[in-house]
Amino acid sequence: MRIFNKKTVFVGMSGGVDSSVSAAILKKQGYNVVGVFIRTWQPVWIECTWRNEKRDAIRVCAHLNIPFIELNLEKEYKNNVADYMINEYKKGKTPNPDVMCNKEVKFGGFLEWALSNGADYIATGHYARVINNLNDNSVKILRGKDKNKDQSYFLWTLEQKQLKHILFPIGSMKKKKVRKLAEKYKIPVAQKKDSQGICFIGEIDMKDFLSHYIDKKDGDVLNGEGKIIGKHNGSLFYTMGERHGFVINKKGIKDKAYYIISKDIKKNTIPVSQHPEKFNKDEKYYFLEMIVDNQNIFYEGMELYAQIRYRGNLKSLKIISYDLDKKNMKITFYDFDSSIASGQSVVFYDDDICLGGGILSW
Image 1 (tube, rainbow, N blue to C red):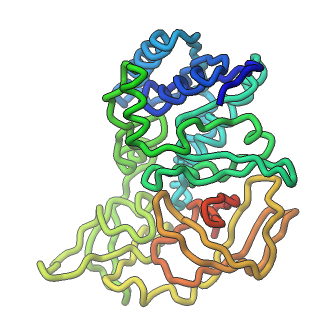
Image 2 (image 1 turned 120 degrees about the vertical axis):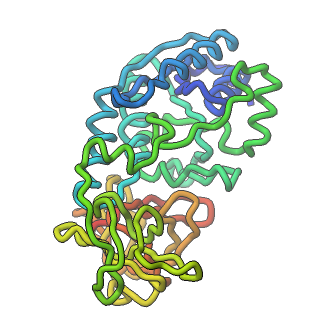
């Protein structure tokens, strides 16, 4: 595809392979490409990584001969992503910071700034796709072609007014091909490893991160009958279905793993079981808080498939009730899952099409 009527695209340049190849593809297609490095907040106690990432982004932009701009969104990230995540954990919930980062920073602050500064579109290196529905002129999000890298789960909050200005150049490719294109275009970071960890903050254990903002209070681990069988470092640091990070006393070498089946924040206890499927069977219904304004495709009695975590298996569910005005939904899962936790994102799919989602709340 060659663009003859030049459109301007601001590409979010992270200094990594995916965003770099995205910029190269768009330039080859004839777009007027501008590279933008998004500067976000990092705690002072974490080793600074953004300077190295910025340096790599500058190198790539110079190599592609495109302008480079730095955009400071520290305040937006701190207030709407980091503080949100910390506050949710303090409530005993399990939030997804990557979902909020996409909503508030990449497709929030960045998109708004780009459009107000001459961009027709923004682009990122996400493994997801967007397609235009000619019947109603809407835009839909699809899973990325690379199922192992698909990031549509993190994009469910995006609305039509945003999607019409977003491009995902590598969404129809496998990671292997993206690497080959990086070598073909002689991208300076072609061999760079993929980043891991919390969005923009980096590779740090979640419990280590939270321990700087939430006091650790040792508590008891209980079995299904309520007897003390171990210790933990604070119920706020754990999530449903987790099987690591706490100590079980007198555990035999042949014993099965223990899974967290509930949390009592006030008493600071975490009940666990080797057979989580035997507990919480009466907890049939879950409430979802819907964020987006234009999700009017749902109805009571509708049966759907959904993910409750990144790379998680699809789970079948039924909508018990749906209130468009209040933006909430009551659902029930057909299959028991002990890892379902308040604060998680539930994302609905119809084959590869992302239909939207909500945040579990109780």
